[in-house]
Image (cartoon, rainbow, N blue to C red; front, side, top):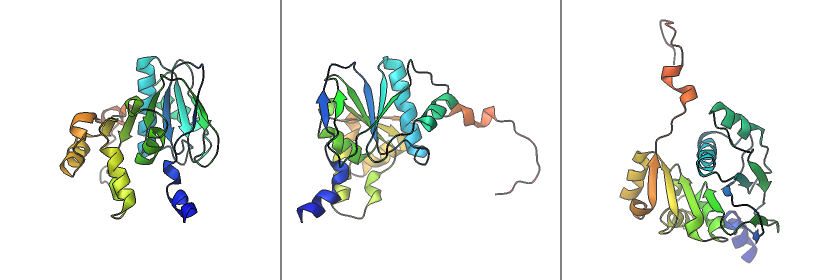
Amino acid sequence: TPDEIEGRWSITKALRIAEAETPRRISMVTDSINSESLFGGVASAAILAALWSQRSGLPLRIVTRQRAPQSGGLLDLLKMNDIELSAPPECVFIPQDSGDSLEVNRGDLYFTTSWWSTAATLGAVPASRITYILQEDERMFYPSGDEQLMAQSMMNHPDIRVVINTAGLLERLKATGVDNLARTAISFEPSFSLYSAESRPQADTGKKNL
């Protein structure tokens, strides 16, 4: 039924926007930045978005689609990684099933964190304003079917810039059918100096336990 189809694809529902006289910003579009979500890929994405904001001088805004944002964990994460922004990131909640709209400047840039947040953002703004961080083969979330095809279409979009977590993942994706990445993607190697082996005291405790 139409309701079942709409429910199945609600995560890709276009982000509602309203143009306004606001400063240009970088908007990171993700599901949640609450403490239970702020680990692994989401943390890496937030760090990269903050570094982009810092380097470009554009304010950072976090747009969540599934949970209302609680910014405490995000601020702690940035502090742990010695990232100082000119102003704390603005956090807004635009639920995918609501009629709420995001105020935007026509020149805003967007940083998406999954194939579905990329699809939702692409429904609202030109592909040229979207950068998509890809940190795993998102096709593998699903059995063969429509979701897997949708994931590949976003990963392989010819006009969206893609930033990939590790060169190894980039090479694997190019070798398995996501060939546009050869032109649209760059890779990075994550490094968190706070937790590097060189910075931790290494006590000689004898026998180690796994």
